[in-house]
Length: 404
Image (cartoon, rainbow, N blue to C red; front, top):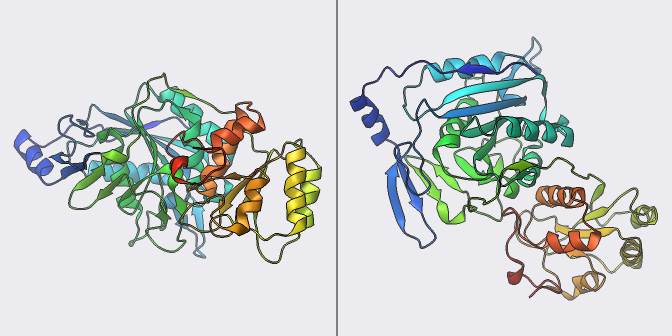
């Protein structure tokens, strides 16, 4: 690992009056669970979700790679440039005079990755680094590529057990070196938010919105608002003020922080389409759980599938060999609801597990986490319909077999 580089540790040249003037321009608006609105000033004092921050606050940035730190070669092809983004962070913070900004340390990994190259081994690397530095820092930012950001955020939300601090993942659609880039804005916002808000969650920040990480998905490959949270509102929104919906936030944990890294990736995700070789699924089921422990089917609408005898045979066979069959939706918004239509009632009778309003990204992370814990298939099935990290809505609002 490259040694951590500390940046923005110089003294604040502003006097107290000027600092108050700056703070006065950034109000914090908080909406609580009773729809009461509370006003305060970002970074000043501690009340509600707001935390006091100054140069004594410490933020750790884990820089994994991604578009943000890339530069084009002579042919215009973007490449990772070691050291470049770390240097830009130092320069950027040297220009800032807001007293609520924390002292920042950047840990740049020696092999910077494109988002599509991130895998569970890198999630473990991040989780272990967060654990090693957890007590020393007040907040954390992870800079990475956007392609797998929703998967990484979902995985970390389960791996970081009893998380009591803010972890924010961000990146950019356009490199920092470009004139019209979203990199600087995303970076400054996450640095500002990670230590100043009492949000005990893994989050994704993009285009002025702070999302719950395990509710996100990449929705647009060509726009600055690249991420969406189709079934859950943003936790916070930045505009002329920082607007926080504190009624949505997870409660502070009661246990000691620890990380879990034994994720079990023995699963297959299949998007069901009209032109499909169902026999391939049957062959997979016949191999048993040594090859695959869970089959995630992305079906139509609210979890609808054709009454194809071969598909029913596959699901029956999967149940015989203790292969968990989980159903999610191809739709970005909405929920998988058992027995919503007669056409999907036969799936419920066969014991498939509906994911309610979870994203496919969160579904896969949760399965890997639960099987990694050594749970039996029936225990995993029960936990899939239990809200563990805010990843899904309450089952009581959805017609799930066996759940009241």
